[in-house]
Every structure is written in structure tokens, then in C-alpha cells.
Image 1: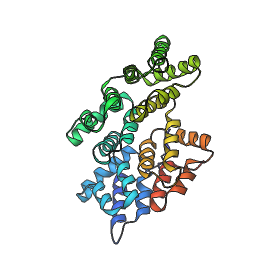
Image 2 (image 1 turned 30 degrees about the vertical axis):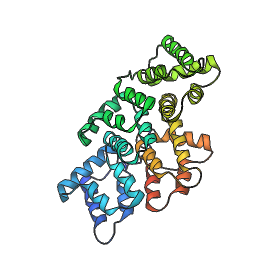
Image 3 (image 1 turned 180 degrees about the vertical axis):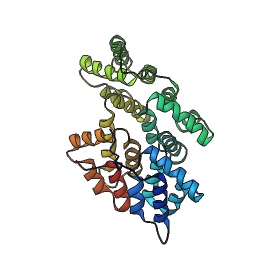
Image 4 (image 1 turned 90 degrees about the horizontal axis):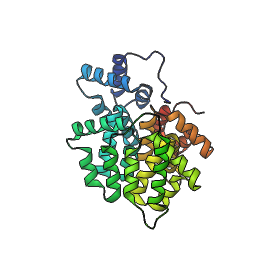
Length: 315
């Protein structure tokens, strides 16, 4: 469930484009006007506004935004202006090729559905002239590289139905490959985690807990490490409860001294139109504070206003 609040009758894309143009005129940019428009338009509306802006003013809206906005607000708004697949592609490319933020790239890849990944790969290639697999090859190593390549390369079932017998067999295989033996058979983990659907993995996790007395998540933490463990944990947690997973990612980005704004922006911008309502509910349940309040205390100025607009009302 999304948190985006869109006006019941949205202005025409042409009106929005004109309002934005006015916000850019004169000395400085009217950031509040920009936020009031763009943070309250869905992906389709934003695409139309960009078309209208280009047609009317002969320049790309994203280029104009880049020259008018500054700092974290600029980063967040520019990311928001992409359609979801292009946005994911941009984030992954930035993480793999520029920032070496391997955890960020892993999070995006391992939390997307097979059909999202198929489309993302096409966009990635047309946008950057290289295949996603090539960038993964260059930026990662070992079992982490193997799981990412398998995960983006394997067509998985997307339906809700699960074959319980196979799920139980898989749980036993993972137990034998991990906790039951000395050392870990990483191949078995890579095979099952890259080839099974989300609901199937959730069933494996449930059966694992019933039979072996603790969560599969715990076994992964005990048996694997580093970026490989991070990939497996992301896959299994997003199969079981993606909202809970992202609530935790957001909490970790804001706890302690300083805030990891890159993570904060990435998660809020990419999940607002998907499941942010559920993420907010999980956040309140686990941390006894609302996500809005936490974001409010960790951010400031127009950057804060933009993120809070995406998060919607504070419940």
C-alpha cells in the first residue's frame, strides 16, 4: 500500500509544468512549490509533467531540477522523477560503478520480483550500454557474486501457490548444507535462494523454524558472512515480510550518530508507491515511534519536507 497523497482532481500536466517553470524563475528556486507539486503526483503523472515541460520549454525537467535544487533535496527529487525500473537501474549503477555501495545494490536486486528484474535489466542495458551482469561481475566477488548473478539470471515463478513437499525437502537440504555439517555448502543456498519463488521461500522458512527450533535467518547468520549473508538475508526477509525488512533498514539508517541519507532516500523514494503504509506500520510496531517522527528528527529544511510529503500523514 502506497502513502502517496495525490489530489482527487490533479491539475493538468501542462498546469503543473507552468507552475514549476514559475517556481524556477527569478532569484533562487521556490522549493516549497516544487515539493508541493512533485511529491503529490504518481509515476504516470510525473512522466506526463516531464513530457509537457520538455514540449513547452524545450528543456529536460530533470536537468532544470538539477540546476535549481541543492544537496540531499536534489538527490531525492531527481531519484523520484524516474519511473521505477529506471530508478532501480540508476541506483544499482551508482552503487556498483561509482559509490561501491555494494550493500545498497544488493538490497535493490534481492528485494525485486523476477518480472521487475527482467525489465530492469533491459532498461539498464539501454541506459548505460552495459549489461547489469557485467557490472555485477566487475564489482563483486566470491559467493556474493554467484548469488547476485543467479538471482538476476533465473526466471522464478511469481504465483502464490507453493508445493509444501518441495518446500520441506528444501528446508532439509538447507539444514544439511549448513547447520548439520562442518563448514557450509554455499552452492545449495545459492541454488534454492535463486530458483524458488518468494512464497516458496517463506514456506521453507516457516517449516525450518517448526522443525529445527529457530529461524532460517539465524542459520544464515551463523553459517555465512559478509555480503553473501546480506544477499541471502535480504532475499529471505523480503520473501517473508518485506515491510518489516525495510522498516529495519530505515531504522538502522537513522540510529546512532548521524544519518545514512543515501539509504533513507533510496528506501523512501523506492517504496512510497509500493508498500510504505505497511513499512510505517511495522516501524511503529517494532520501534514504538512513528517513521514520520524519526525522519522529522533526523532531517531538516526542504529535504525533510519532501520526505515527509512522500511518507504521507503521521499516524
